[in-house]
Image (tube, rainbow, N blue to C red; front, side):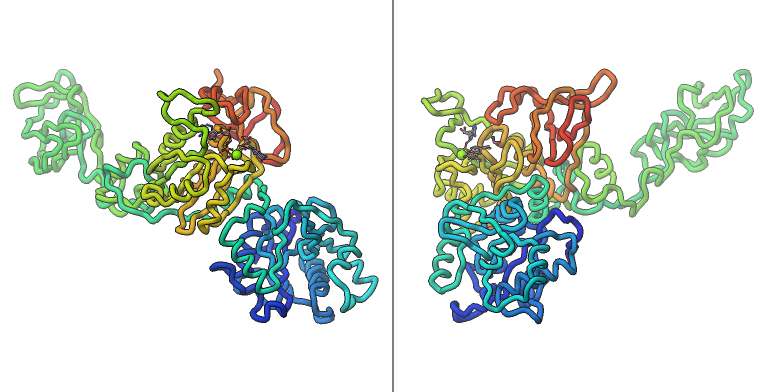
Length: 610
Ligand SMILES: Nc1nc2c(c(=O)[nH]1)N[C@H]1C(S)=C(S)[C@@H](COP(=O)(O)OP(=O)(O)OC[C@H]3O[C@@H](n4cnc5c(N)ncnc54)[C@H](O)[C@@H]3O)O[C@H]1N2
Ligand code: MOO
Ligand SMILES: [Mg+2]
């Protein structure tokens, strides 16, 4: 159940599903399918990235789990009654909500920036494009609607257009045509099927915030299916199950020093003039079975570090504190009891949880894993990633001289190394020309098919040859987000191919690539391997940071420890995303999240490791 009062800044979006579908001569439009999906589900998918509160105005929730607002009994049937009913419901159930957005259930191409644009344009607004006005795509003011209903009863004849005029709604223009498409007739349904199967490049880009995008990414990502690793291969993986100890460690009482196992009481009266004289009755070395003879009065066993202590031993005296004469050991001062014996089970016991699930296995975890006695460990596999650099201008071979217009592919090599560092394996890397068919072919190559995630660079922005989205849509991928309010890297895209592979479309400018890799691919790899989201750390800013409000900034930065051990960070000169030279000095990012106070030199700022 969602809480309408949790954040009054979020505008609720209500899907209008109450109308009859007379012209379609048939089923409820919410249930009509475009491709495999019901219209209502398509709309919900499209609205999710831009709206945190979705509701349905209609007879029921269509199995979506959304809250349903039904029309008030005293309202005339039709959309106007529906709008008044929503306003009254919100006024009663969510008094802090000032307005709401509506979108019709038969409008599957709803603009991805609908909520952002409509809610930014005053108290009441509606969509307009080259085909005219679209009163079902509108932002409605709750107080104005309530006031209107006080003035006069709602008339059966009134229209949405008249209602918008009565609350002084203003038009908000979208370029082109098609996003406000309404499916009213079988012909329009057929047209929409074509649009759905092909491209929807007419849709403008959503720009959601960094935190919203990260939330979408986390919501869409499931950890990979665990596999088993051996002691030899487990390092670098995340454990998918607790590792329990088979047996206690130490497995037996053993010596912590090279020397003699003895009974401390035999040394009680020792002095340099009258040393204790103990008979050496045997030897116990590491690896021995521990069957050395029990020690009796005035006896000792020569013993090595790690060797089992014989029965009767109360201490192990280091060899340096003794003198030997033939088969006798001489001890000149009393030696205390209980010294230098490592007792069975004092490290861990059988059945102890030695290493918890979710641990990233570093070399320092290996001693415990090895000591556990387990032969195999359930781990999340390293995500397999396929890297595609797109660009007609790109040259991979450094031996090749650049022709006019060409550049060296600078982010391809970065990709392979960064994937490795982030805990993934790179199943392949190719460079392709700027062309949708080539991308589609690359995605179905064997190496790409074997991967859990595909990363492309370039061709996700607004240029004529920026084909990534169109290509993905043509092969039935689901675009989870495209366009995030970040700098650099705003055009970044995150999607899932029809077979479930994740797809990150990183913008082509080199530091937009590295920044979006850090902001989204690193978290994706963490999520695929069951690791929790990473938290930034703080460092003192020692430079200016040229940051504007209303955007999340990733600044190339250099981090170091000051004389006093304080972490200090400076933004590098040349933040422009085409510049690569300063990345040599980059070992961190300054992460300024949209909405936070603008950082001044000397203040603490959030940082991410390189
Ligand atoms: N009208 C608009 N233009 C641009 C926008 C926008 O919103 N509206 N966004 C800008 C931003 S921000 C970025 S970032 C870039 C992203 O562009 P694309 O992802 O479409 O990438 P391309 O157009 O293919 O290339 C951009 C740039 O990067 C160079 N590049 C590409 N790949 C590599 C590589 N592997 N190694 C080195 N350099 C590479 C490419 O040559 C271009 O110079 O779009 C802006 N434009
Ligand atoms: O991501 Mo772009 O200009 O922000 O490079
Ligand atoms: Mg481009």
